[in-house]
Length: 341
Ligand SMILES: [Zn+2]
Image 1 (tube, rainbow, N blue to C red):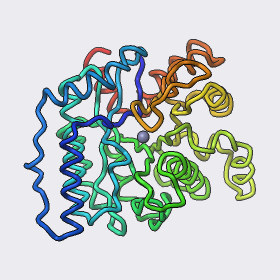
Image 2: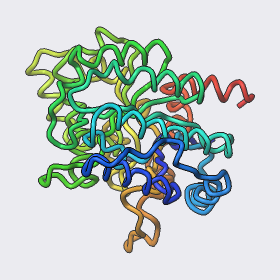
Image 3: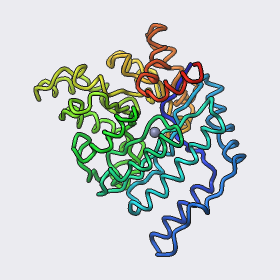
Image 4: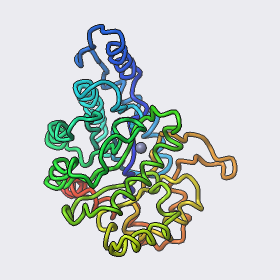
């Protein structure tokens, strides 16, 4: 089985974006907010948006199941207040849930949280628990910077985030650490802000002792871990300077990396530097990089090819494609077992 742990609903019907535009317009000009009930998308529209996009590619490339969350760049937690984020997150999560109901063999949900800059993350627990309890979601996306590129929240190791971690641990829910749109002109959203955040999240964990307090807390750092694998020696050396334990012991029971690195040398480096047990297959398809690589003739985000071509044993490949995802996403494993898989 091939499990893709990083997919977003980037192809949602246009009505979703139009509803959000109205919500943002209402914030600007003081007109009434659109009601959640005013968003109407039929099952047929959902089906079509998936069948012609993600599912078609999954079939072509041979992946079976995608952990599916709302479009990351659309989370835009910096827009409006908690109420605005809360209504928006609930709508987006519901659509991912409906996709998982329409295609139960191929999609299972991960939640966007109704984060808002300066608001206590405890406010996210109601939506998180609703998604786990009512929707059967198996993960969350946690934005370490709801300000959208200005980094006004405390680091991930701060007690500010602890109520969220307590709930994650209680439900065996890992978090993919995933920022959203950058509203800081210095940082391009997917080319800089995403990779900065991946690197930043890792370094925050390195300098802290978060996993002493939460030994079973799990973070998935997407996009191949940003700059982390490439600079592994620097991070090991910094940990040594800071009198931290070896990274294997300090972080690698809790932090995992995905394979959204869109070329072979990147995957070769990732799988050589980072222990295979910490690498989870993902494509982030259909996402930021949608084109075909002229040097290979294949889509950049067809990441299965790179894993197949990497210098790995069959057992290691199985870990990356399936085993690690089932270990990290405990509720996913339980769900699959219930289905006899
Ligand atoms: Zn993503």
